[in-house]
Image 1 (cartoon, helix red, strand yellow):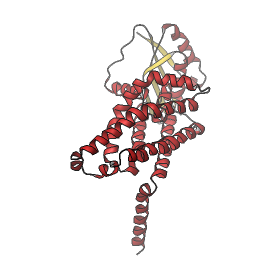
Image 2 (image 1 turned 90 degrees about the vertical axis):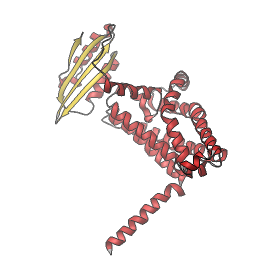
Image 3 (image 1 turned 180 degrees about the vertical axis):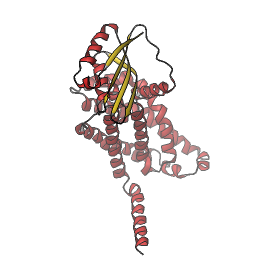
Image 4 (image 1 turned 30 degrees about the vertical axis):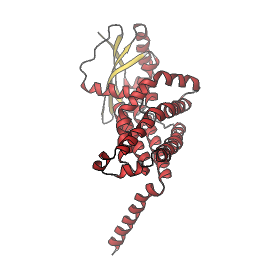
Length: 321
């Protein structure tokens, strides 16, 4: 009897949960987008930047962007706006694939929605809002005009990168998702991208700004492409115009070692081209290939060897030819 009652209670609870997105689509989308954006920033801070202490103020700022823009503004566009512009959008999404193929007007409306989202909304509304938010949150002295100028320079690259992921995803979203699941689909796609990016670029603190909020942009697409290329790459090809160093450290494991070493390299004119890390028990070893301009090499070497925090890892730097 008790088991039956518990099962009935669980079924009732699950039934209420399933109805929530349908009964409260706007609130559900806002809460999910806020959670997704917060989680994306936490992944960037902990996995990519390797921070020992979470910057909750920054996280709250990005979460607010997720709440108001990704949850609120995008709901107004994808649901309210598109329902008025394309009244048959909801009924088209509910049809079977065979029925969709027999509905030329519905197919035209589908292409119209994708066009408005990808060619109008994202380039002219979303990206400017994203660049401004990132600048305000992550810069000590925000310069809105400068960052908008940066976006104008990056616009072509950002939009092409966006389309590679979001055009297929948006077609699926607008073709098959009921109206109340359009925002959750967007949030889920973005979160999956962030998880993949975080897994691939763990410790790449020098480019953490490029993956803020898990946004799909020209910069983050370049990072993803580079990492995929690294999987199949052969030995490092040495640029003859640069000085090449092999940096190795070994000692007791501590969160933040990789981020510290990468920061020292970046601040002293170096670039980490390849790195390998091994963690066995309490022991930690990192091996990096670093390139730098010849006039910066000696300064970089001294900065690594003289850093007091790194001294416990017994850093070693040798030249490569």
